[in-house]
Length: 306
Image (cartoon, rainbow, N blue to C red):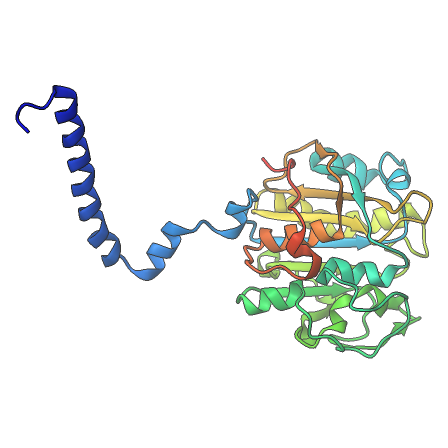
């Protein structure tokens, strides 16, 4: 062996050194606490997906208008001039179907759960996985804030006095989502640090643009979520605004805007996305490792994060 060429001797020394390092490293890893080893071995879900890990995400769902009716409209100055201009615009975002109710179920659970119309169903009929149940199972917080809801957890179908309709509130379909996580909008906190990890805000039938004008909905959004949006920019939080469906005139092309921390101002993406992509993104932003329904095979929304 003493007569080996110099380059062979160097190779033998390198291999020997690597072997000694490997033997030293193994007992060190074994001695580490299990939680620390797990942290070392696997990145958080959001990081693994190339997404930020916000403390809070709010999703606002508006109604029955196409992308072409909303983006660039002078009737929606807050949505366009603040949220879109200072956030991200998904230029190729689509709903799944018509009418409203199955789209909400698709957005929340990745499946319409057999509901294909706007009829009032028996509440809590499904135990399928959904965004709320996944958050709860993972020890994270979930909640909805429903304008016009008569009382916290009420399963009433409609309330004409407050222009409330349960068809826009999909969490009531699921037995694995506690009724008391459905709040009235008067319970929306002024201390945003107390918000759930992920929450949905559902305006009533007027303020969601269903029965009233685009301007009415835009003004409501600014008045009721504008302060949160401003706060989110500097407090590791995000606001997402989307629509359940279009007005049946533009192939279900809808407006979807993200705003807040980690969202690149003035960004846009032309990748085609739908409610399943939105659900998958919300799951991964929350650091979940499970994905409901069609979200399991959907891609995350990318190209808008800084």
